[in-house]
Length: 530
Image (cartoon, rainbow, N blue to C red; front, side, top):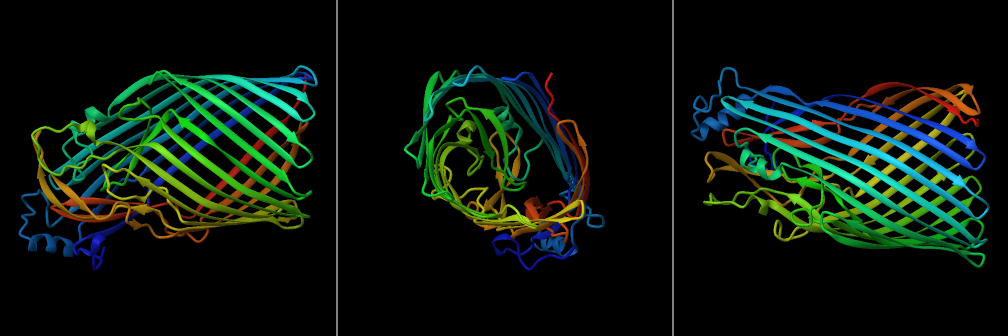
C-alpha cells in the first residue's frame, strides 16, 4: 500500500492502511403478558444478545516505509524485522453481550389507587483479546469487563382529584462489577503495561436504596406541572444523594405546547475512559468508590415546544447539561522516575453538553416519515491531565436524518439516510524511547492537542421492505422483512489505530460495516385474558 505524503502532525514516514473487521451478532427477546383479572396485569420479558468482532489482520510494511527507517540508522534485523518478509500480524477479537430478564405486575385497585412492582436483572460482558507481532516485538493484552444488576421497584399512584395525582415508591439495587486487565511486555502506547494491570484490575459489590416522590398537577386549563424528588443511599460511599426534578407543560392552543424540564441526576455506576493513544480510547464500567472513581452527577435543563397541524408535527428542544465526577484513566510517562504512584493516572474532570434538536414528522398520508437535525457540542475539562477544555470523544457537531415510508401493495418500503460530522481523536506526532523504573523500555508517543483531530464525516443509506403476513390472536401479527444496510457501501471510519514500529508509526483506519443484507421475521401473539 502506498505511503501518504505525511501522517498526523504532517510528519513523513507514516504507513497508512485500511481494515474491515468481520462481525456477527444475534439477539432475541420475548414477552409474555397475562391478565389474571380486569384490574391486574403480569408480564415476563427476557432478552439476550451477543456481538462478535474480529479485527485480526496481517499486512506487509511498504518498501518506502522500510527505507525511511533504515535512513535513520535503525538496524531492522536487530529489531527482528525481516526486510524480505516484513509482515505485521495483529490478532484482535472482541465479544460483548447483554442478558436481561424482568417480571412486572400492575394493579388498579379502584378509580383512585393503582400500583406497580417490578424485578429486573441484567448482565453485561465485554471481552477483548489482542496481540501485536512485528519482528521480535510481541505485545499481547486482554481485558474483560462484567457488570450485573438486580433491581426491585415498587410504585404507588393516588389520584387526589381530577387535577392532582401523587406518585411515590421505593427501589433497591444490588450491583456486582469486575474489570480484569492482562498484559505482556510494555506496548508502544505505554498505557497497558503489566505494572499498571494491578491498578486497573478490580471487582466489587455495591448497593443502592432509594425513595422517590412525584406530583402531577393540572393548573387551570392550560398548564401541567410535575415536580419530583429522589433520595438515594449508596453503601460504597456511605452517603445519601438528593435529586430534585421538575417538568412543566403549557398548552397555548389545541396544537401548540411548550415544555421545560430540569433536574439533577446522580450515577453510581461509572463509565471510565481508558486513554490509549495508539489503539484508540476504550472504556469500562465500574461502580464508583468515591475515591479514584467518584459518583458522577448531571445537572440539566431542557426547553422546547411542539406544534401539530393536520398530518404534520413540528418539535424542537434545546438542552444544556453540566457534568461532574467524570473519570478517566490516562497513563502518561514523562520521565523514568524511581517510583510511580499508578493511581495518580486516574483523573477526575467535568463536562458540558449543549445542543438543539429539531424534528419535522409527517404522520399520515401515502408517504410518512420524518426529518431531524441535531446541532450539539460536548466538551470536557480534566485540569490535571490537560490545561484546557477539549472536545469529548462523543462530540458530533451536526447530525441529519431523513426517513421515508412508502406502501407498495401489501408491502412497506422505507429508506433512511444519515449524515454526521466526524468525531474527535488524538493524533500522535511520533515516538521517543523511555526507560521505565520497573524495567524495560517502550516508545512513548508524543501527541498533538487532545482530541484535536477529527475523523471524516459519516453517512450511509439503508433500505428495507416489510410485509405483515398473518394476524395472530388478539392483536398479534407476524412480520417478514428484508433490509439492505449501507446501500452505497460508504467506507465509514470507526476509529484510527496506530502502531509504533522501530520508532515510527503506522496508521490503520478501522472501518465500519459495509453493504449488508439482513432478513428478519418477528412474531407477536397479541394479548389474551384467562
